[in-house]
Picture 1: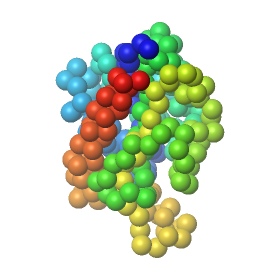
Picture 2: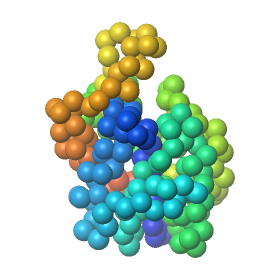
Picture 3: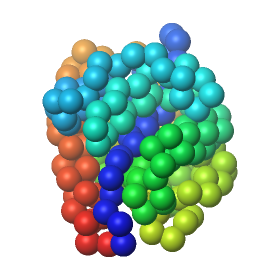
Picture 4: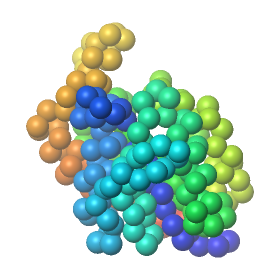
Length: 201
């Protein structure tokens, strides 16, 4: 099977005034990841991606792109961005890999977990939207798609209104330092594990 030549790392969250909230933890970690993953990655700049203007950082192996879509309707953009990436780099399903970064209420702040692409969305509407978009490349033989969940913790009260207020609240200074530190290191470790796994497939 051909080795993985390029890796697309996508983060989902919310734009505008909700950009620096807990629901956008994936964006925060992706920005921090750029500084540690590879020295050849460019600064984030606005680029046409998935038929929309998106912030992207590119290097010879990795491309990091932040979804410009509203979290709950991320699927259409992720499908278009993935298709564009494989077409522009002329990659077969076996030659390209896609990793999705997203927040996770079920994990404590600072905890990171790798999940299968099609594993349960656990009520996460952004992941639900992506899974509902039926990205055909993810179903191709030899496809390498994975999710990396970034823990943000959960408020003590579990009613819908409290949870919604929490995920749309601004990230505290302490929690941002955790996301930019321990969480980012966890994502780096997850990527190393995925790269090793792909080599063995």
